[in-house]
Image (cartoon, rainbow, N blue to C red; front, side, top):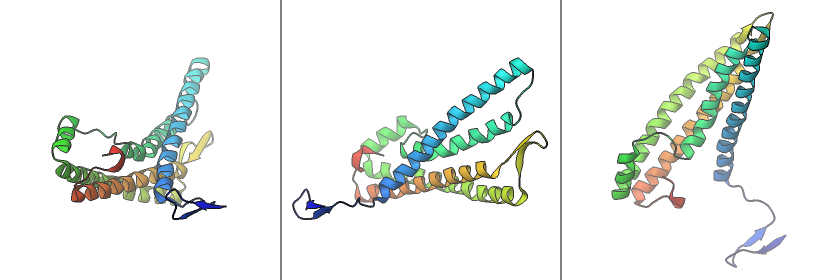
Length: 192
């Protein structure tokens, strides 16, 4: 299937175009969606533990450890989407007014903020690689042997993926802010 393009020059084929930005957005949003599903899972295991404590007088095995690891996973899986949506805490009372009055300097300040965030989150990712490797090598697990155990490496793997994607998102925002600051223009779509 071929037809004329919207400007009448280029033909449009039936094959979808490979769009890296769209795929990256899907990865970031997909991790955030997985984090949201894990919030539901965390609520269910906490509720199940409460019911077990009230009915049986004791906690379910693995709930404390599983809850702690799941909570950390949720934070890191949703961090990149938070960065992408520009929802990190900042001093908006200063930053917004500064950026509007001095767009170029504001963009460069935003680039500095995003670069610092990318470097710090990148360091967290780098340290997580060592933890993940140790968990794999030593067959680290949570729980009580003989009752219930789970390996920790799947949790660490998702934490590593989430923090790595967040670091890359910070660096992409740094690049966009630098382009904006050096060009002296606002980003498309009004994103900061």
